[in-house]
Length: 173
Image (cartoon, rainbow, N blue to C red; front, side, top):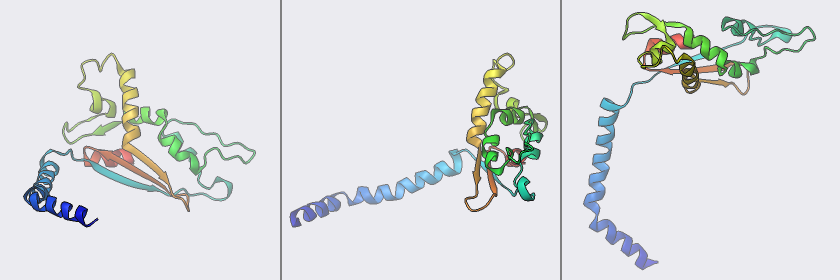
């Protein structure tokens, strides 16, 4: 055991310059990458607190109807619009397609354009292959919008990431 420890110490003594150099150079290279090359991503966080009373507590039918999804609550007391469905609603293609067709004002273009055109409008085949780009945009929104539900309460946390601060906030709202 002692021979092994002495061997390891001798390896460190022989290579101490390399160890110190790499300890100084790698953080410097990381700082250069973060400051000049890494993409800037803005995050918006929204907390949704469902309000209501009795059996309708946590009803999301109003939220769903804003995005073109009709949730009928049955008269037998079953609540299909419960808070537990909000994560599924936010990750649905119907909501994604609605968001992709919604117009947003961007800082770069200084005019309102649809999110779909903002993401993929520069592609050569955009005008005649929109179904493909709707599907691609829906996959993009799945990675951009994160929804979590509080474990001890009905609060829904919505996190949105985008390349522009105002766009991130607009998508979240």
